Image (cartoon, rainbow, N blue to C red; front, side, top):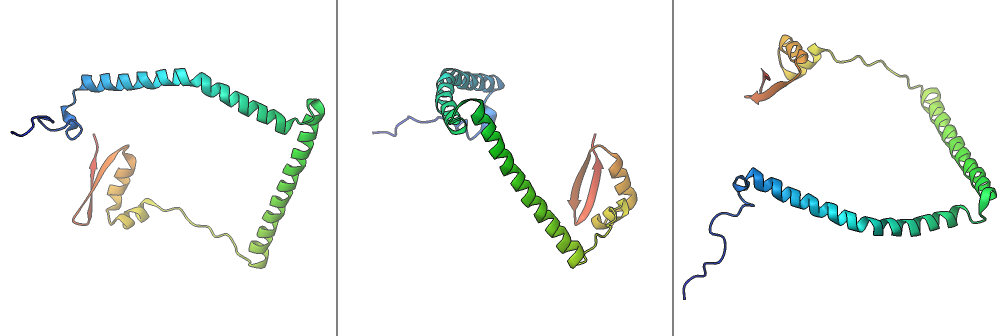
Length: 155
């Protein structure tokens, strides 16, 4: 028997994306978006119901065990005390580090000057005038040939 003739007769579209026409891309993308939107449309109410049942019920049970305004005030007081304690510890830690760095170790902040265009040109091994021109442009094309910087102005 001869060889089976089933299978692709040419290259696969996935291997050569240029074979897909723009119209086909739009149709396939549209169908994909339509199916995702319809899936979300049908599944969203179920997800919303589950989140509402478990989320709201759990939230209410944890934060309002006694119910009512008294439970809310208790929650705000205990939460406020917790936040105040955390802030107090943070402030102590910051003050301790400030004291250790600046008073004990005598580390002083040094002024570091900003780099100039001449410094930048020196780093690039380029002419400072070219770097100044490059700085004024909105967009430039930069290539490196023979370890030299070649700058071309974009259109």
